[in-house]
Structures are given as C-alpha cells and as structure tokens.
Image (cartoon, rainbow, N blue to C red; front, side):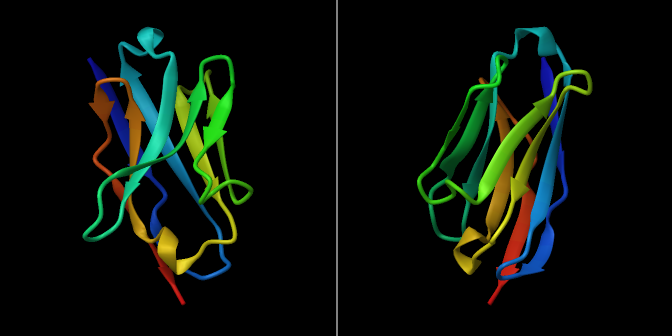
Length: 111
C-alpha cells in the first residue's frame, strides 16, 4: 500500500507561481515513477508530468518550459513548481504513482 498526500494548491493571479508537494508513505520502495495529473471542470483527467526514480522527467506540451517536477528521495516527496501560470491551468491536481492517487489539490488561476 502507498499513500500520497498533496499540498500547496491555492489561488494565484495569471503569471504567478505555485509549488505543489506530494508526500509518499507506505511501500515506497516499489515506486519507480511518480507524476502529476490534473482535471479541469468538465474535462477528462490529463497527464501533466512524471519523474522516474533515476530522475528522468517528461512533460505535457502544454506545461513544458513553465512547470518543473523534482523529487527528494530522502523525504519521499515529489514537487511540482509551476511558473507563468495561466487561467487554463486551473484544475484539481493529483499526485500519482502506478496504482495509486492522491486526494487532489485545487489550483485556481485568475485572469
């Protein structure tokens, strides 16, 4: 079993920044990849970014150059630094690893 707990969401103006955190606990030794998804109102959940245990990262085109994923293995925590935020980034952001999801954290970007 793995538990994922997100934090760091909130309300920010367009052009601003937020940093999300995801703390993992439980059987974390088995986690090879972690990432973030998001779901905007009325839309399907979409993949945003992921990072492997070796530090390899991938990003959706919509966030490339603005978002950065990182991980602190000592703290079993993954971070999502979001810069130059746009109103279209408004969504519930979910931390993910294979077979597990966090509860989600709301990010709202006002224009």
